[in-house]
Picture 1 (cartoon, rainbow, N blue to C red):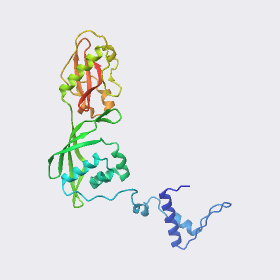
Picture 2: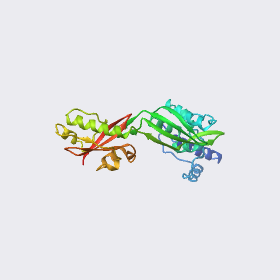
Picture 3: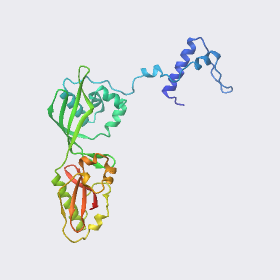
Picture 4: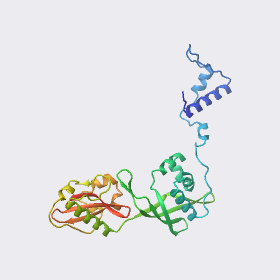
Length: 287
């Protein structure tokens, strides 16, 4: 039978306390019930189970690597973190984090698991350096789906740094980033292409998930006579019913989704989101 470490610590502490008091312990035999001596029972009754076990706090975190030395400058701290993220190196990236970030992330094993879910950094370039912050252009592996959400192809990130351990580490939680999106004019062009393809009953590219809003409109467009004209791209708040988009991609959808009104025999609104350097249709609704 495997015993949890906490249970082993409790048994060890009870045994040590009982022996120190001169007590004895009886070991149960298969043919008789287990019985404590009176001395052992008093020891057990005196244990406050609500207090943390002092031995447990002294146990080292399993598999936690020693921290690397803090970087000499804020720029070295940030480039060290980003190089570690490019390499998907959990040890180097963990060492680059501030003490507050490491405490917030929990054990090293938790950060190691979290690293697998973070946007994949492919490249970066430092664009500005301040006394306690560094700004970079970051290239990501783009993604767009309802599970992982949206990862832009590029972002402008400002990394906060703190002085610690005689050097500098990255205050990850205090850092910010802004996605760099394709031009809005490209969204208008993508919406026009999509409607034209649907009108000609040809399969038009859409993102990998289900078309949001009123997906049957794509079939309705097939064979529809007349001319459609896409207008200027707007924000998500211009969509007649943004709820399906927000449910799919979360509240941040308003920062990257564009809505293109389309005039024609069947007035439409086409919602698009960027995947890499291109806009892809994610939803359509009748105006």
